[in-house]
Length: 330
Ligand SMILES: Nc1nc2c(c(=O)[nH]1)N[C@H]1C(S)=C(S)[C@@H](COP(=O)(O)O)O[C@H]1N2
Ligand SMILES: [Mo]
View 1 (cartoon, rainbow, N blue to C red):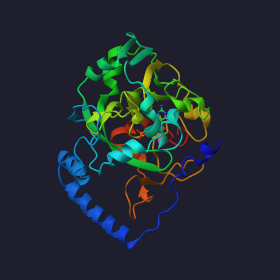
View 2: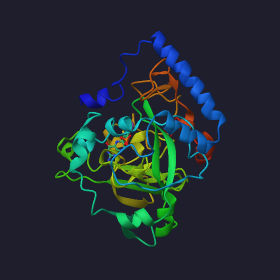
View 3: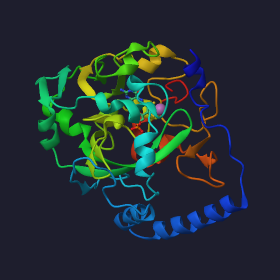
């Protein structure tokens, strides 16, 4: 399949460095140094101010949130522009081009919406989206997002730790993994007609990864409810793993005893492992993962920004993998 071969090469062209780029990147460095010396909250504000945008650049319903107190949840890096976050997407249910989701996800019906939480739990339950919106206080979390294809963004998400939801269904002693099943409805999702992937799009985490405070049950971004193309009305965000681990438009969360199969793992298990932690030293079989291209970042940093182990969340998550061979469990 051509698109599978193309995955990751979309932006390997056109990166000549001009004097203007150098000037701009120098200015950007100065701006970052200034941001880094301010407090976290202040710097996050500065990041937004730098965009010259209001807190709510979109036109969707506002979703109020407090700044997260979870360690590592608020990067000081400059947030990617709202336009890029909402028009450069991977959501194959609406097509495989980056612009397809923004163009076609208008047909997604986000109400009514229910998420069934089941499997190895004492209190299996179906949550209405309105219940999920009230289940725990909303937090803003500004996370780096690194796609396996080699590009990255910084996104101000809104939601709360997935652990809040999982605690309420009371996992049994047998629960070791969590499977995430997303919507697959061909009447709403034109991409489902294609057999590019095995639908529904399914992902999985180990239970302790799912319970980590940084693992976000996400219902909004940039001060608003989620745009359809970003996985409305509810998705996952796991910031230390490649973006494909974060399933969009979730309908089922199932706790299991055995490791669930995943859609990308079924498509190519040599290229898309179950763990898929961001790791600059473990190359994708067809391209290096040592560097990345930050979307919207022009100048000398383009394509050359170093990729960080666990996407920079090493302090928070490395303990989850103590004693594990990261090459074996990639
Ligand atoms: N259901 C579903 N979820 C998905 C995908 C998808 O195709 N379908 N793509 C994944 C990939 S590859 C990435 S990089 C992120 C992109 O999220 P964003 O478009 O909100 O930045 O969503 C992930 N979740
Ligand atoms: Mo991705």
